[in-house]
Image 1 (cartoon, rainbow, N blue to C red):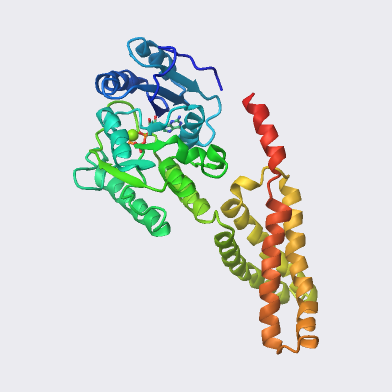
Image 2 (cartoon, rainbow, N blue to C red):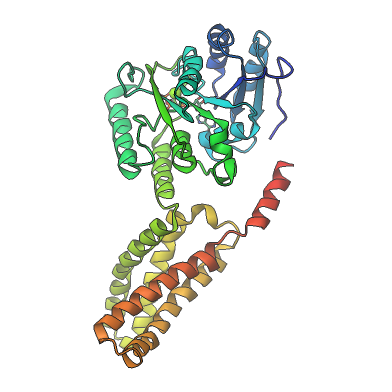
Length: 392
Ligand SMILES: Nc1nc2c(ncn2[C@@H]2O[C@H](COP(=O)(O)OP(=O)(O)OP(=O)(O)O)[C@@H](O)[C@H]2O)c(=O)[nH]1
Ligand SMILES: [Mg+2]
């Protein structure tokens, strides 16, 4: 990460709001954006502006030049590595902010700068921790969302997200909004603060609302404008990232993860039986065939479970190490099941069917816990140290 390149004024005024603006090649927009912010914000609310930039064009230079005319401090944090994309950039900005309120907005003028003071005022008035600028409440609209296709995708994504998180997103009609104000304390008092945030791509508001659980949420309507200049960076790839992000948030709790682990495990019966069928037809004795076919199920499970459930928890071990451990635990499950059933029937007097179900459940829980602890448990101290080194 480079040093901030612009400091138009020494320090922000007390009580100021930090406006975080992620930018990726927005050279055509940032001057107009700073002009409109200058026009509408400082007279009503002291502010500082932090651009978190992943551009490959001259956006930082354009900001530096335009900042000369701004009556508030303007900083550009240019990241050499765009970790986490747009969401990662916002988290980077949150880490540097020192103010009570932080506003996040896009650089392309789809979010009206004049609304910034109103977002913070609404939060103060209602004692909210999060104020969302919404396109979907009375007074708001999505005029600038180009084309029926994008409107449909946006609507569908909003519906899916709200259906997956009915409680955490209560009171938020527009969880896809990129324009919102949040009290910094909501982020810092959440467990692990900004470190717990693992945004993936565009949906940083979703990440904050689900992981930080602000107690009180308010919405303010706004009209989503057309892009002022430049090109959209949202793409089909972003769409896939969004779905992965949803899944990751939804399986953040161990119970939900165990459920997903079980479902993936069940799907592993398909390759297992297919392999068994093939080996059987090839004339292999059924016992070695069973053992081999089980490996097909194990491989299937590993390939699905890794990216879907443990994406952010696999960097600390080589993939071969993880695959070996995973397979060992999965096979131990099989070996353990028969003596367990014998124990349940012989010692506890259970019926064979009950004993089998009990053994299946117990080995499943053991397998899940074993996989979590022995394959994917992040070694916290080590990870933190290596990150600290990177930052330094
Ligand atoms: N730092 C950073 N900013 C990004 C990245 N991707 C997009 N942005 C910024 O995030 C904001 C939103 O991106 P847009 O491309 O406008 O996405 P959108 O508003 O969904 O799409 P349009 O409606 O077509 O404008 C803009 O300010 C972009 O410059 C990224 O990878 N890193
Ligand atoms: Mg945009």
